[in-house]
Length: 441
Image (cartoon, rainbow, N blue to C red; front, side, top):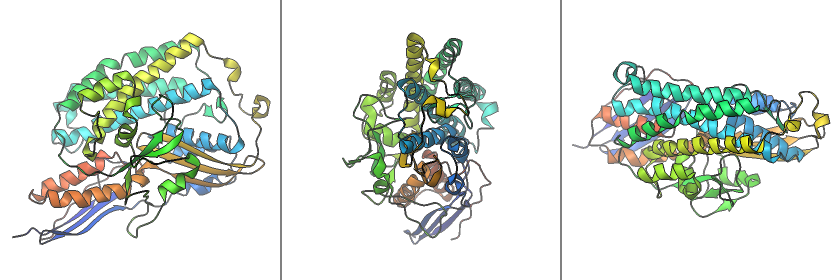
């Protein structure tokens, strides 16, 4: 007899925000498959209108408590592009370091606290405090280190203070650089043990080739803060100013979040997409780890996005340490320090214009687009977050996955679906909720 069932998953747990899964299978055929986003609109773009480009990054960082630095940097990039300001080489280096720290911090959060419980058969990381105490301590040590280094660099990780249009209001001193390097060097053993742990886990077998989208670059560096273009695994690239040709936003009636598609019916952004497009540009240490984990090829299993995050952790840690060593060797030019309220004395004139910022946030490519008037005030804004770009792809993954796992019991089917969504590390709005599942035969 062909299986029939209904899944109504309210709400997904261990993801940032409110999301539901609705599945209907009748006589072995998939009749309905929906990934519903039920968050209320937050209107951040409306909040930016009328604001100065010199204050807007402090607003946009509040879009997310996990990706606060990414939003700040995308915002600053868009603002500087709009007014025609080019940051110094030193400023770019420090911003790259900040991107490394945020991605490292966010990936560790997902790997240990959100994804690992799936592999150890528990509902959250809390039971692991008793059963895997040293593993939990390792995760918290690394998280603490990332937060400490961010505190030194930009005042705090959640909603950074000192990074702004034009540069930084406070630049790290020599002792700060030494402390940051010492802290990051202290993470290397824990990260090695993380790779060993993840290599022992058994990931679900599932393949679905899709379009992968990320920043690409003509130089040798793995593009996180900057890229020369937006690239696709379909062999197409476009300038970041043409991002709307990539995203092609549309709505579905059962979701408050927009969706995107480019050359196929959907596309994927995030760590796995970045590796598929830019693997050769990873830090040598990250490539060493990626090779050992079997990630040195095109990967079409979305569950392995978590392994891609492990590889990127090594890239961000070692690339970040290299930046600090360069700054220690060359010294910091403190004449570039921005004096708050005296931007006109720091040669940052404003003018009307349109600017686009594109950075690789932990969960994928993030766009900010601002229209600015002659006074440096924003007249229009558009922000497209990575998770919105992934939603259509997740739903298509589910549509392919369900017929392949119909022989499993209902509890395992639900578990596989939850794991699939969590593999993307979605950032819907930074909260978790009670899980309710019902099957109707």
